[in-house]
Length: 635
Image (cartoon, rainbow, N blue to C red; front, side, top):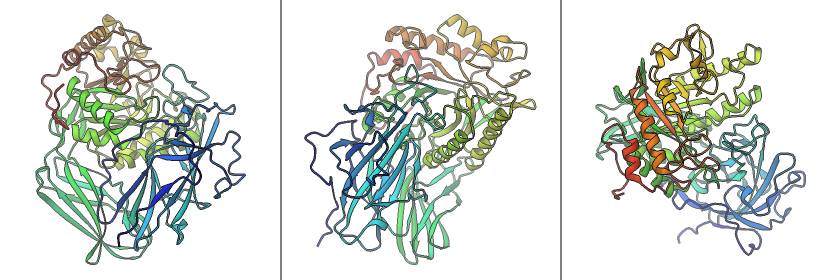
């Protein structure tokens, strides 16, 4: 007799229509791989919903089955899009979700786990009235950008019925790592966007082994030495002797290496360090994004217990004086800024995102995607791995600088590093952007000193955990400078918005003479002084990246019509490539239209471009672009 599949349904009658908040991804996360040890059961696309405008649900015990009547059904997405949504007077929005899950037959040696891709911002989960603890040991998940999971087994009974209750709270608190979401400090206007409260990433139900591996394996692989460093995490219920086995298959589908480590494991969660070498690895690059298929097996005695799959690339990114070296060779970073916000959520469906990034890579020749202060959503990272598109990720910014915002920043930084996993595409990480959340970075005060100390410590922390990444202290301006050197950044990044071509050319024709103590223009070049300190002189000690520029056609001025805009981009790119000493890279603002920022190369769905041949001629100034296509469609 076959096992009956679980049943997922609302507890009460459905409303006449389901509120469609956003499109649901029609593909599963490409990083999820089925095996004989874990099974994808279902994606939960709708929930019963109740707004809690007076925040009375916990006091009234809405988390207990039957305590609250949920009168509408919604798809996963920001609740601000609901017709009846009213912005709160006190700046706090609270929403409750309910779902009935029935698992009629619970398999021996298995547990059941629910995964949330994203929820904004503070989340609590109850099962059958019991407050749950997530896999990291927290009863409250605090983040708007990181995934999280719960083991449902402690709440399961013999009936297999689970009444799932989820409470999500979002506020306009500026100490939270909000990114571009509005706060008490920045209202929704211009470059600041609306709130996105609630569950707005996919929710999945999964059957897993009692003793298992977490699916997020972090690590990196060095092409010069062939060294691979992986950090899998075991989750053990039954103490005993175990074995971690790593199998690596090359891009040519030949088995490259088998590595084993024997362990005596006690109950609990534990991270492991696996280091081994692979002879003569094929490097990952934009021209040839070679990917190795890796499986990590957890074994016990002579049998398998669990297995996770992922892809790994051998990629190095480092600096030498004013140059950036990719796999030991000079590389110009030809980038475009991407803000993953489509008006419905901080994410697109998989299909338009895949098509948009492939289209952009093919048409513009860009080799870098800068995901702007929105964490590290795995979807664009999987796509970028396959396309050969380098990715720059950023910790979502708080909006004020104080002890609380720094604590939130560190938690979000840890989440970001975990979600990067082993993606070879990710090469750059920014800690802050344009001094948002570190406004006192240049102050001669105890508060300013605390901010600078935190940023220097965070820089060293990331470099120690991930030496393969380039790290930036504060992208755009106010880089830390002490004792005659830049102390917490691998790149000198500048944000220069100027729609006057003559002025642009004059500023960039000689950065060395411009960045001198007696040059007043250097301090005016960006929104705030590029470097903290009055005696800084650029001596080609670090690569210079113009990490934001352009934005033509919207808030930043310049031509809006496509032909004129792309012509302006071409002329500005020519200046960038003529700069002396050489600029090491640039990042145009931006890829797609976002709310009031209608300055994208594509529209907000990443699928509209009237004249692709013209933009290729305008921006593809680096010669023929050799890329790996996900398919072979013609433009």
